[in-house]
Amino acid sequence: MFSVAAPLAISSDQKRELDLLLRNGNSPQKVALRCKVLLLAQQGMANARIADQLQVSRPTVLALRAAFTKDGLTAVTGIRRRKRSPKVLTPELEQRILDTTLKTRPGDGSTHWSVRTLAAHLRVSRTIVHRVWKRHDVQPHRVERFKLSKDPEFEQKVRDIVGLYLNPPDRALVLCVDEKSQIQALDRTAPILPLRPGIPERQPTITSVTERQLYSPLSTS
Image (cartoon, rainbow, N blue to C red; front, side, top):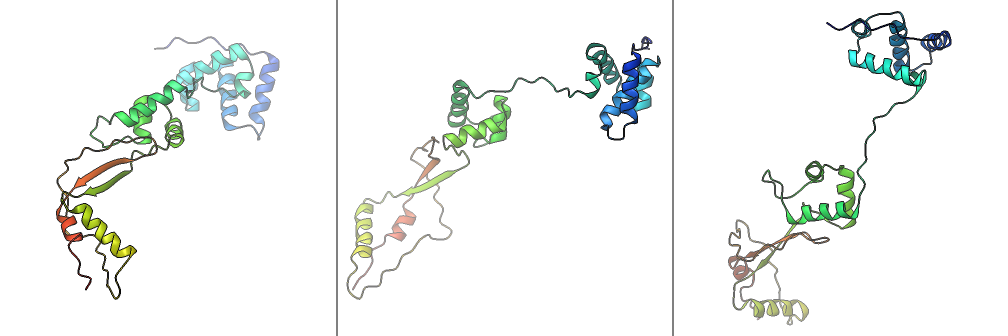
């Protein structure tokens, strides 16, 4: 059981002001609620009973009583905000965000960091992470792929095909084949080029099947 608190000391001028705020139809609901709490506390009603009657928590009643004792009517009409120490984007924090983004991966098996996961990991706001990524043009979600052929005549075939486009023979029909369906490059012998500021992660694919079909000899006669 809680001990019964002593009646709250309220002067006649303060009580008059609380009554006016309570009866004023333009008073915000939270201000009117604070007035009710203080007036009931001034009558000697127990804190737990005040909380039950006004449907608030007992710590709220205690905090309001303490604030009124310290600040007077300012505790009723003033705006009280939580004191938070905002995170400031320092050069050290900016470098830490970049190093974590470019050199590490999330521990949950994800392939890259997102704004939310990195912000939660470093305990900073998403706005700070997004600002750093935008400033350095870092986009971890982007991946580029390109293919290299193991065909020893690959360079010569490319020269022949490019030559057809740049200087086609008379009455020649040049056909271009882009991609073949159901052909997937599974062999990856080249290392993956890492993510860097302004450059997405790049995955080279070593394949010969597609290139043999793409750069097969063409007849121009």
